[in-house]
Image (tube, rainbow, N blue to C red):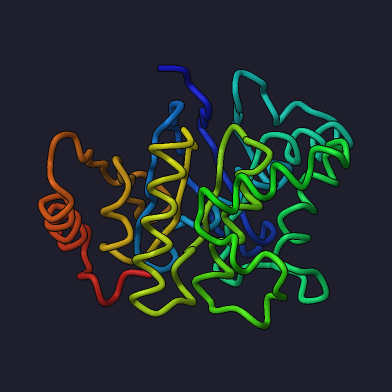
Length: 255
């Protein structure tokens, strides 16, 4: 299986010499094409910082990040911006949709920025909207639709350019349980049917159970990892809870 992402000895510091904090402590791991990987850990464990290191790259204090074979830590600033735009997709907790644009226009914006010919955009948007079940809201504005619909719009925008990797930061954090389950089903379909490679930070064991591998962080380091394999989602969910307990916190205090 092709390697999409590789982190080699990543370190991230905050502060100055008088008050220096190591948020990421020599982390190395790989993600392969078609994987759905979850990142979990207690508050302050470094999971969001690690995701930020991958998404912004220029914030890394030390180490190397390879995306589809390219050492992105060696790219110049102008090349890095283009590389991120063409190869990464993002799904955030707070959607990041523009209220002055319709759902269709929000999705199309990703194509426009990447200079896709105008004649192709409408067809691509409608095809993706049909796949994710949001064709009926394409002409509505974000403030006219539910949180779950907004997040599926964000998913459509993230994947429409067929990025090498989708980064999801607490994607269900602002949703109720029903909308969360619908979104996670959407992300699972993106992974299984569209071949999307997903790296998701989450505090929620149920959300994590949709992934096929989980990395657990503690004090800026990888504590352990577990794989779903042939387990059912319920069995994997129980394994996640057991690992969280071993990590030093139950489901309620992991964030």
